[in-house]
Amino acid sequence: MLPRIKDLAATLSPRLIEIHRHLHSHPELSGQEHQTSAYVAGVLSSSGLHIRETVGKTGVVGEITAQGPDPRLLAIRADMDALPIQEATGLEYASRRPGIMHACGHDVHTTVGLGTAMILSHLRDSLPGNIRFLFQPAEETAQGARWMIQDGVMENVSAILSLHVFPSVPAGSVAVRYGALTAAADNLEITIIGESGHGARPHEAIDAIWIASQVITSLQQAISRTQNPLRPVVLTIGQIKGGRAPNVIADQVRLRGTVRSLHPETSAALPQWVEEIVASICRPYGARYDINYERGVPTVQNSHQLSQLIEVAAQEAWGYEGVQVLPEPSLGSEDFSLYLEHAPGAMFRLGVGRKDKPNYPLHHPQFAVDESAIVTGVVTMAYAAYRYWHQCS
Image (cartoon, rainbow, N blue to C red; front, side, top):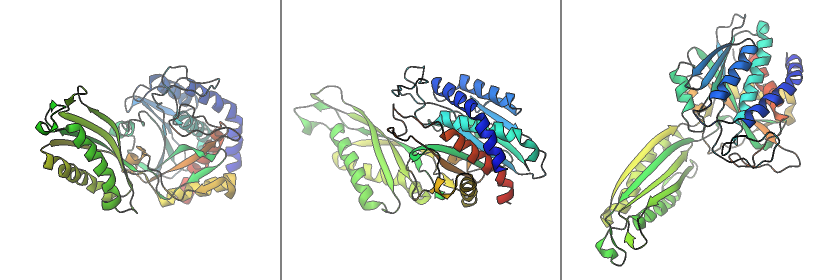
């Protein structure tokens, strides 16, 4: 079957490039993927899939009903949204929408999902079981997976696969990771409440800006002395708001940030840990505080069996030299983790690194991919899906 899948992918390659360039040129922000969804639905429908639109608000579901006897249902997920970034790649198919760009490769993910659907639809008579494709909105805001799940996309799903581009891996290669792939990501907002006063008489006020600076410093220092260094925690304060004038002591400062961790036990303890540190700084100076610690998405924990499925499929397709096993996880986050609360799954990294050209990181205005990676992703995903009913029995 692998030669047949490779032949089909090679034949589809010009069409896949066309799809990718259309998606890249017409990016849409999270929750606004109306034109993208309509385009995806059109490609799926023309490929013979049964489709459902407006799933998860702006998502699309496509299904292949096979003739095989296996009752297990395999899901394949691709995200579709773009970022509020002004593109600076200079590509001939660069974004036509000012201030919006596919800087995280979701246009590639969607193209690979569509290519996989096109190939497996062509091979449906030889598939042992059914496949459901999830084209998800709003991954960048960590909302889309929840919306899709609320609309029932994980009903009867036995396993789920996905991929994410990786610019540090060269195009033509695939990287797999056993166990934790990404971090849990929580949102943190701390409000320090002091008492205003004249800048020349600080002893008569409670300086919220100064106290906030102590809170930030203490949180960063405490990580290295109270958290297990073998269980990493990253806390970043990315926004500070406070103060009215240079000669007025601020009575309120708001800090907003993100907290990343890999281990469930560590993650569970972090809200109390944050509050204890904030309280220890505020109380001696008479300040009050308010903390809003919002749980985000959990860590992506790849199934060992499904990671092995992808690794073996990729090795057969591209040889051992075309497959890497990642030694460590990323502290980025992915709402693919929410699907894993309903079924085992695995996400692999698709190499998109360009040869002889600069490779910029994800979320960079000059991020660009080697488009030859699209066929690599399609063949890997389609063959892994085909092998699922044989290897994961």
